Image (cartoon, rainbow, N blue to C red; front, side, top):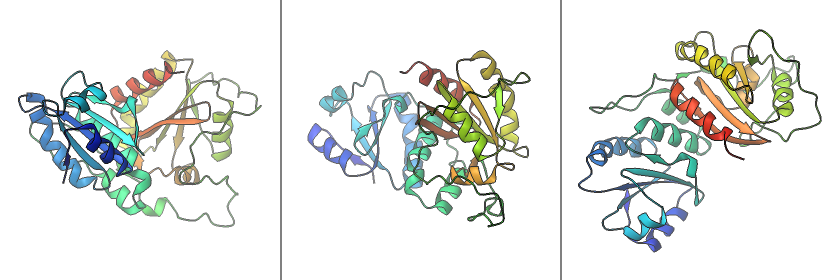
Length: 285
C-alpha cells in the first residue's frame, strides 16, 4: 500500500525506510494527476521492492516546498535517501517512470524476477502508450559460467560500474566508416571506455532484435551529430560474456557514463528519451 504523508518528519522517515522511494506529488483537482494515478497503482504492484509515497500538495505544502515542486503531477525518486534529481518526472510521463523504476530496482531483484519483469510491458491503461517491449535474452544464450576452454575474460562484479577510471591508454584510431565503434570483445570494450575523454554511450543490441534495428539509424545519427561523445555498440551474440557481466537482460539496453562513473542505464526503444538523456549528461560537469 502507498504511504501518504503530510509533513516533513513523516516524509524523512519514509525516505530512510526503503532503498528506493518514489514520491508522487499530486492534487485532487489536477486532471493529469487523475490520469497518472491508475498507472502508478499498476507500477506499485509490479515494483513491490519500492516504497510509493503520496503527497497531496494542498495538505503537504511544506513537503512540496522542500522538494521544490513547481508543477503537477511531479514524481521524484530517492535511492538510499538521496534524491536522484535528473530522474525527476514532471507531468504524466508513465514511460519514464517505468524506465526509472526498472533501473533502480534491478540490483535488488533476483535475475529471474528482473528478467520477467522488464521483458513485459505493464497492463495498458486507457490513454496510455508504452514503448515496444524489450526483448529478453534466452537463458541458453546467457550461460551462468564461461567454459574453461574459452578465452579468459575480465570479470566484472554485479554492482561494479561499467566504467573504470581512465588510464594512460592511447585512444583507438578513429573509425572512418562509422561514428559508432563496434565492440569486438570485453578487452576491446574496456580499452575503448578507458580511453574516452568525455561522455560514453553504449548500445547493447542483437541483429535478431526488432527494436534494436529500429533504434540503430537514430543511434548512428546521434553519433554523427555529437562528435564530442563516444558511441559504442555491443552485439550481445558476439560478446556474450560481456553482456552477462553487465547484467544485460533486455534489448536494447543503453548505458551512459563519464570519467569512470556510470550515470544512467535504461532499456527500450524510446529514442527521444535516449537523446534527451545524452543531451542532459553531456551538459553536466
